[in-house]
Amino acid sequence: MSFGQQGGPQSQWDPWKPQSQQPWNNGGDGRTPDWAALAEASETRNRRRRLLFIGGGAVAAIAIGTAVAMAVVSANGGNRASGTPSGLPASASIPGSSASAPSFAPTSAPPPLDPKEFISTKAKDTAPLSVETLFPGTQLTMGSTVYKKGATADTKDCASAAKGTLPAVLTGNDCTRLLRVTYTKDGVAVTVGVAVFDTQAQAAKARSQSDKKGFVTSLPGKGVKDFCNAATCLTTANSYGRYAYFTTVGFTNGKDVTKNSTNVFAAGNDLQLFTFRQINRRGEAQASAAANG
Picture 1 (cartoon, rainbow, N blue to C red):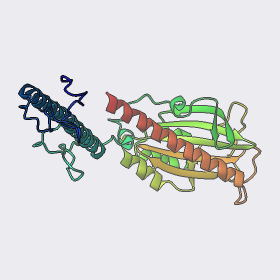
Picture 2: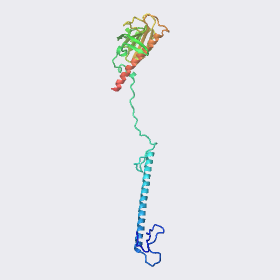
Picture 3: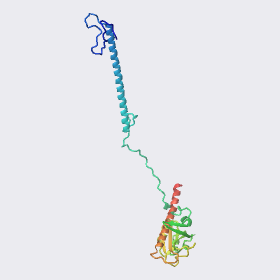
Picture 4: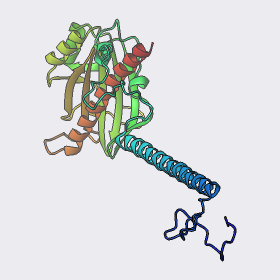
């Protein structure tokens, strides 16, 4: 703002500028002050102060808002880092690591069926029975040894298929059926005889009463000559469930079996084990069918 020139140009008075000239004459000329100029200067000063105050308030508000935003971000970031959901009310509680897992009422499953129960009595052992179901196929493999299957036989007259003391044992314990099969391997022949009884007790008694003077009659046929008719042979007796099973093992050329005839003993062991497994499989199959039925 400029004022009228009195005795030369005068500088504009700025209330914020040091050494600026006042809008009146300091020369003592007695003139009265320019009250209008003073009022305008005062208004200018007040306006600047208001602008500065408002501006400062806005800056302060922005600074406070930034600080609050940073605090919120920092708090939220801290919550995420600690694993606490940010939207969880303050009064909510989160179970700690010591919280116990929910408990459930114990349940009891029925015990598995025992396969031996199904081959221990005639009442439960109802699956079809034949030489082919016990000894299927044309050969059997035990480890690396393959035995060729020969002749088979099935009779209800158990005593007719045994010799020595065994016929009396089978008859005395009410044997109802005798199934036979022969296997051969490298000049050794094995006849297996499976005697069937009504109960496990009868089969166990027949086995315990058998001795080395009684044996199942060897079964020739299908290329196998008579064996173990006059020569010394290996005989065995075992029982499982309602079945008693016997083996007669010897050489097909009529030689006697001695303690050094390891191939004869190996063949006898293989056929005993195979017969046991087949009887047990019979029980397993019937137990499985009953469980799934």
